[in-house]
Image (cartoon, rainbow, N blue to C red; front, side, top):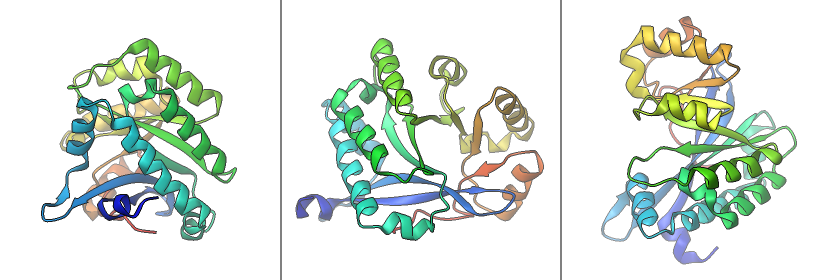
Length: 232
């Protein structure tokens, strides 16, 4: 990895916890961008700008290289003590039509220990056009390699239900904005679990919210109350 990229790009890992035992069962890979003088830049802005120039898939490839380094150096295994179930990587939906990126994701999956499942989190963005046929082909290639697919930020976009039916993900991550509507998230959790999906509730930032989502039946959660994004 060129030193230039290491100076402006880094990765963090945000834990996903099992609510009943509080142990870390998954890690979500998060990117960080820092420019001289300017400082940190919102990753969503960076990826959106890159997508407009059709190079967002190359950013994802760079992030994968950082993760591969953490795997090959043994840092990921030492951090997790072999107890992790999932390693989650965010990808813009349109980028799943890119064969080069798919190849890199599959290569990353081949480096993981057998008990660690790679998850590709599909990131929503109303500003980006999606080739539905190409998306389905990309998803099929991932599933052929037993790579899980997650639908991120459910409830943030008006077409989230349609996306569940279209993508048929293994994991659904419910957006933090829905935490204000307890009856709704309880109903969604029960419905999605009956349909066979793994459900993760995002944005847990205090004890009372953690206790609430636990009491209404959620199993997996993520948020600053449990852990902030970590270096490993």
